[in-house]
Length: 225
Length: 190
Image (cartoon, chains in turn green, cyan):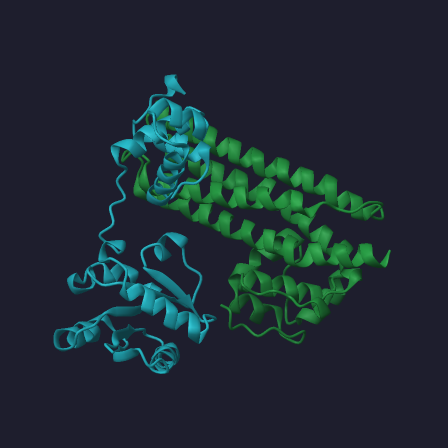
């Protein structure tokens, strides 16, 4: 996956074929299909996206170790990054978290009352924690920047929640793999686990974009103000 | 001076040659064999003494089935993103970005590691760890747990580290669910 070479001339269908993981990026950006034969640059022009930023987001989805350089990032990308992150927050709240919850309910319907109760509460707390964290970010950083950044954004505030969310995602996976009573059928358990791992990895990419794209852009913006 | 004898097992020829070359730069290390499969590694180990194995992390499950490897320190060679739980099974983990000096140091340190550091490690909680887990689940602080069990807070921290390592669960909420699902505690006592 890390070996996909991106260029503005690359056709969108080639891009998706090389890295199907990007479908979730298209979905949250609400980019219209079909793509026909258009290239990355043509699609970005059509839909009003910054090509450089779009390729940066693709690269960070394909290889989670990819870190964009300072030179790649320009201040004018900030509103678009914020719009992407807001869309991503909605995607988790409206799509991924409810989808995972549905699979969890299927698993829980095969469990005893006590397991059902504690696991549902754990997942509900987890989903609630993620959503409150998003709301706080939107309030403390996104809205602040959209209004012209009248004061410094406190990013350090979010380091701990990012680590916490990652821990809790791993915890759910460990509990389902190791401790869920045998009564839950393996196929349902696997569906649920696929969701949990997908959610965990996606949240990691999201957090990387906030740390390695949003944060330096905000710092740049505040310096030049 | 006795050399530390290294065997390398790695399906990628580029990584295999790279690790072998780096290891051979150290005067205290000697490459006993550099092979692509565990079968070939076993053949080498029948004829040559091996002190430390460097193995592709992806081979972790197959390694568990090879009896000769259970008593040896093994350094995992990580070249792709894998679950952290897989990495815990290795004595140490090197990546494509590990420097020559770091890799030498890792191998030399691994040669002195007790073998029980490896796969045979039990993931079952000890009785004391269960006691600590139950009190964590009931929301007690380290200090309160120390006082309840009549042990030092430092010992509580050490038990908690082991609990996290063995269960793979970090959050207090997750540990509570673990304690309930494993029937160490009933929900009425929460």
